[in-house]
Image 1 (cartoon, rainbow, N blue to C red):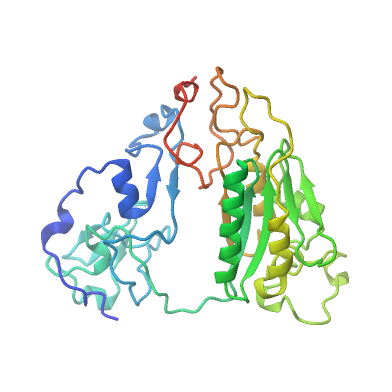
Image 2: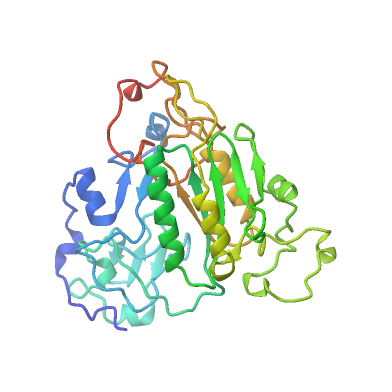
Length: 360
């Protein structure tokens, strides 16, 4: 498809974008940032009290977004970033500069022949900061989704989340691979291949785990011996060839068509984290450990980790937030993840107590 087929734009590309409130930015791009400006020097980075973080809403309905582009995106040769309105373009030499790594890239021939200040491709329009692509290269294997679910929620919120996850399972293709990890004070990795008895592995929420240690405790094959997703169901698969270990595929990651009944049953029986929490403290949710375990489980699968979290982390090495009322405890955590709370780590809205506004 011709990238110029949806009209042309004049010099609007060079116009600075208008100032937008955080809510307007979220409505336009589905993105909420913890800071409204990006640090421009190393000194400014060291002076930031709250880490720079972003909360992105995938598949958000954006009224101003154009139709999906039926061609592959143009990527930076240095960092793999995608051509976007924030890139600097030299129309004389047909070169664009990546704003992330400052690498200069040449446009492909079909772009270079037509691009000009009056004739821009859709992805360079200043008003289209979010676009979707229909990739022309088919994926190598089935999609993989690992659901990382926070159980330190109110009962009503947890019920809504369980209903939403069950609806998501109905929409996934039957060949997609899915897994489940739940976390509160501790982390539980659920096996999905046992229809008679639900089994899970428990990891302490106050302890750090390397990917190799996770694989050892789960007794799964290391990355060099793990199978490709398309080979998961081949007969004659022996654990002896993998040092007595079994692959994660088929135990912790199963096709939706094979494990939907077991997974829905686990979700129906899912309860709020039972560990007691004093009235003056936040729940001891170990988000950092949960995502570390997820990374170790999926190190060789290149899947999507989808984390459903209801608030700040408060119980692991990735602590980032206020744990005890009246005592400001806020530090940069080991977990740089986008979770289901607000960008500053809240429970999904902008309401904060007086203790939450204090910093060390």
